[in-house]
Length: 138
Image (tube, rainbow, N blue to C red; front, side):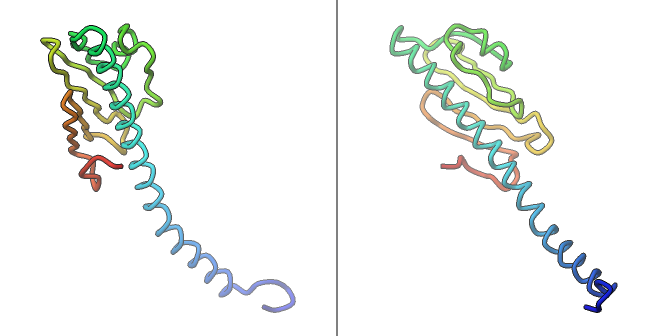
């Protein structure tokens, strides 16, 4: 370093180092965000499942309904205490006969578009189209 400040070479080296660090950090951060949205969807499906199971304990039937949007779920009396924590996923509940149900979360946002998670009354969990996430996270 000379007495007047940094040389052009020193500044270029600093910019290159910052660019290298950014090229490593940004994809890792984006993957972290995607995984957190998927984990959030899993938590929401489990919360909905608990509401359905609670109803089953009281009435010996799951709520018979086909609720195909998150807003329809929130409006239903069985799921009234639940609300999605974000709009990253759209949630669905289907039970045609009251003896079984299937919950589905489908990705709405760009990072989770095409990602689908399901959970049924037998605790069978599936996940598809979620990129590098191929199974339910713990």
